[in-house]
Image (cartoon, rainbow, N blue to C red; front, side, top):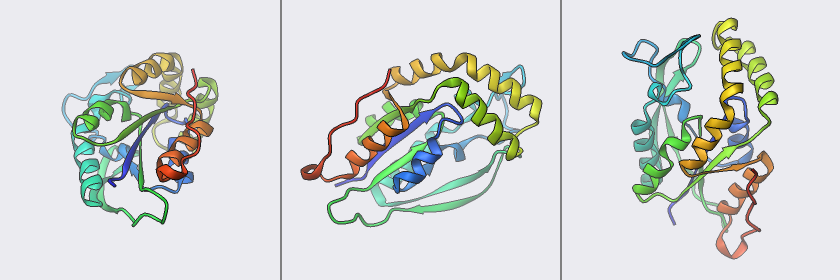
Length: 211
């Protein structure tokens, strides 16, 4: 049985990376496929390059690597440094053998995950799309604290970007749902990943979606 692919989207700061870690599943970081900051024709916003626009991201490259990982059990991905906006290396991902009674589930997380849900299905991959939901004001605070601590960008840029994202979150959530993602809380998303990782004879009840 081929591995199942879970594409996890959500606001920056919604807990995508946390879900990937606590699931215990092989993790694929879609954000490694950002373009370098000096790439031509990057979309702009009032605070600089609009890194929340999918044109700053190599979706085809990410999908090619995911398909290779599902089909062969291994792939090589870039390593991207957000603070300098450039790729600084690469690393290999190799899938483990499944444990008895379990199925391999690949958790691929990143804000642009919805953009490749349908293209991945068109390639014959088994895909579950999730929009990880948290209340937008909470995400704003968590994201700002994280980005300031990690020195991701200049503070004024982080604040302006955060306020812009706070205002536009409902529209992005609707967009993700239109592209094939289901809006789930962290608890619901964990249950869904566990359901996919459990062999059919042992499946727990399916998670319900959040509005």
